[in-house]
Length: 144
Image 1 (cartoon, one colour):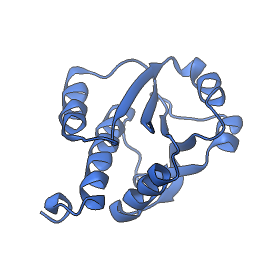
Image 2 (cartoon, rainbow, N blue to C red; image 1 turned 45 degrees about the vertical axis):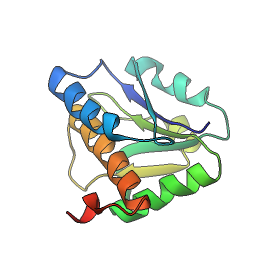
Image 3 (cartoon, one colour; image 1 turned 60 degrees about the horizontal axis):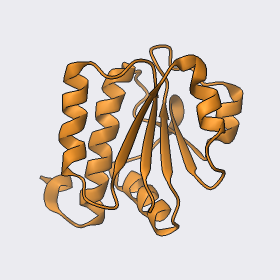
């Protein structure tokens, strides 16, 4: 079964972040399941490089491509249809990725030209995955 994994550098989420993320995660229906992993920033590169080659790795980086919610949904749907796991990688407080992580990434995504705290990016990502599910399934959440 395909899954979406979020590997986040740094410590587990603060209470408000965990509660916000959990609100969106509990709304997800199969196959939109998320597995969260929190790793020390020093171990982030090794963790990602150890992923299976067929996993579609998305780095969240301020220098990445900005896409709208519909295009984001299409990317997730394409991976699900192709039977690929989608793995999102968020840096910790410093948010910098090694060159080897950039080389491993299939896509580099930015939420904005602005820089957001890594904890807030976790909430934005959880919400966008939920929004993608709603877009793909034709429900009104995206246009409400």
